Image: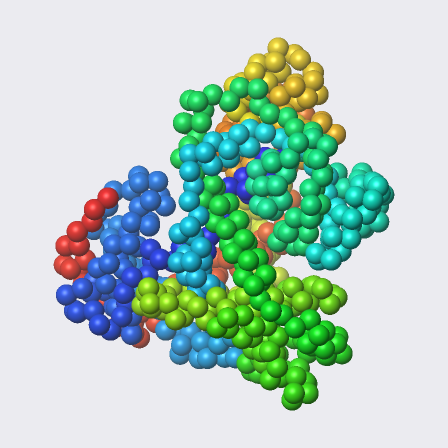
Length: 570
């Protein structure tokens, strides 16, 4: 795995509620004037709202900012600007279009589902010290795996039975994979480590011994039968290393535990469903005959408008104690299911999986909406704030549509600032990624002593797939190295750079192979960059203009004395 991919692994998508909970607390009408530090139009920013926005800003900036009145005002201004965009969108009724209403309903479902997970699943996902130690062991272990993929359980069970009857992984891989490399290698995925594959796939694989073959494992994309062929563990895993990395690995441990708990809960609920396969097959036949309808958006319909016999619409696809899921319910849930997911139903079995998934969602939504412990104010605020982000996206698209960059403007910009439009420095580096600082330091020292790169890579590198390419990245623009760019900008061919820590328990050492200096671009080659720059600058000006006009129209006000008197505890 390359350095850039390692950086990408550090970025995780958080649930909607978690992203916005610190931004939303009480812009509601039941707040007294004493609570309000700013307002614009229908929006009132309360002390709690401001306090949480400020703390989010403080921690996002690494706790390095001095919390003074200027910072207080900047944070409130940012919230006012956000709500100014919402008022701008409302003026144009962007929030009432069929697509917007559909989007809001999708957001509502997502937030309620996250609340369901939080109240009924996450509370039972407890991470123990044993779990943390096991995760740390896995982070310091590489396993080589092969797999056979199947889109549904029936196909996976059939493959597993054929293995039990003596057919080989290699023969079956050649049959199931269209990918030439996987088909020709027995489904070999090479060496993997934590967080590179589906969490259920990894959890089973790390429990296996070399030579073992798993039963079919349900993943987010289908089913895999896993074979482990090799295990390589870092020879030195000390107690001090575990203690030093504990706080960094804890969030990943919770994330994995909760995801596995969610899947187990879902599978158990579906197992308890009484599903009518005969009715599902009848419905599947209807879907096949009306494929364009099933795969369409139909924002104004409120459901997927399949033309079905009346008797079919009222029948129950799924039943369980206290819950029924009819064909009519299915058409509504399908309407709120993304089109690519609907299109993924290619046979009866994958369609039945879809029906089960939609029934589970309807079951969970029904349960959480009737839950006494649900904080509806919090939930509605989360829905609103997330929908406002959608409106902000529409606002950005509106700005893009207002901007036209002429050819003359491009020529003038190039003549004025041509030196800024350069082809950036590019480096061709070879990399060695290790699982700990000690190995990285040793690899660096060996390279400095003149040891062959391939030998050091084989001895210390944790990604065995890199041995096939010698760890060579090819030419990469300097800015793609992110925070390491300043440290790499002056390396010359033959230089060794590092070791650099790129994420928890991951270090990288580079050897510079080739270097291409930055160079000026002719106007034809620079045109797209110039257009992008001018568009961005014009868009920024237009955004500020529209927000300022809306702030004035909706009487944006900051109550400075009240704002500066808010008590902040860090």
